[in-house]
Each structure stands twice: as structure tokens, then as C-alpha cells.
Image (cartoon, rainbow, N blue to C red; front, side):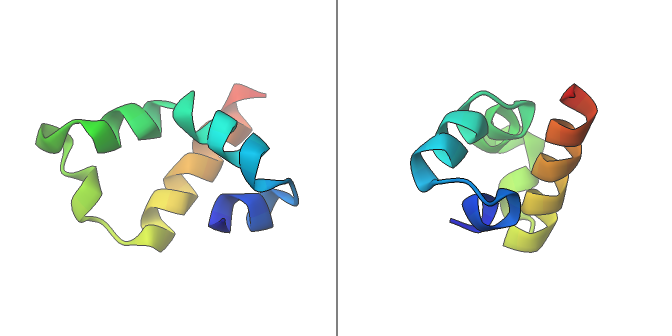
Length: 54
């Protein structure tokens, strides 16, 4: 929901975006350590990735 709010999109679109990112891949990999970071940090990483993809 934080991503949907930040991008002013609906939750379904936000989930589609999230699942297609490298950040999601890193969160799925326990060795990355990203899952230990705060929600805010993860959101910033995600937004940065999406900005760079454009």
C-alpha cells in the first residue's frame, strides 16, 4: 500500500510493479539481507529502481 500511495496508483498495479523489480528478487533471497531493512528503506530502494527504469 505504501508503494500505491507513493505513486498514486491502485494496489493491484503497485503489486504488479513490485513483483517485477530487482528489489522483490532481493527480498526473496535471504542472503541479500534486504529483508532486515526498514519498510522506508525498502520503499526508497524500490522507488529509485522504478525511477531509473524510466
